[in-house]
Amino acid sequence: MIVNTRKNLLIYMPTYGRPEVSLKQAKNIYKQIQEHRKTLTKVDFKFLISINCDNSYPSSKFEKYSDMLIFQPVNLGGNINIAFGFFQAKQDHYNYLWIIGDDEPIPESALSTISGLICESDYDFLIGSRLKLGNFVINNSYMDLSNMTGGTPSFISSTVYSCKFNI
Image (cartoon, rainbow, N blue to C red; front, side):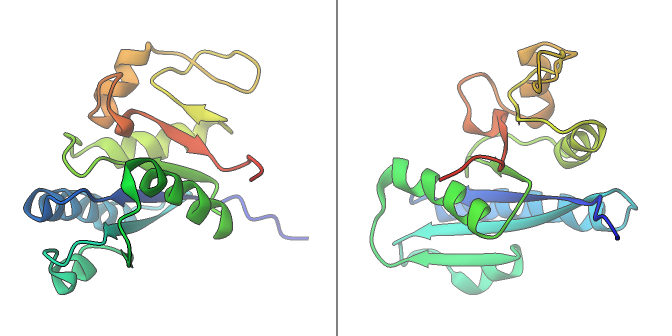
């Protein structure tokens, strides 16, 4: 029996009426994914952008910088737009979900940092720390991981979730 030891992470970016800012973020993340795909790590990344019922987004440009693009036919609102990422990740059998803000600072090393962390252990979630507490592993402070992923404790991009949950 062959066991697949690869892990996969869905990077989900819900949008909120800022096409220029969102496109800049999409380019940043997609560039990191392309660089990551040249390496031999055991993590596969897919990038999904959800355009929240806004015709000002040039679909052709966003398709170029994502693996999947969904145009929501109605305005989902902030909470449902974020929750959509969880449903999509679970439905498509991803191991992890990273929801990123379309206007949050994401450093160029974020994907390599996250990839390294999820290769090390089987996290329930990464929320800025890595010291062992049951299945939750923590070695650094909350602020350290927040800084590595580009967020602060208040940014959604500071957390990577395991998709082992049941819906």
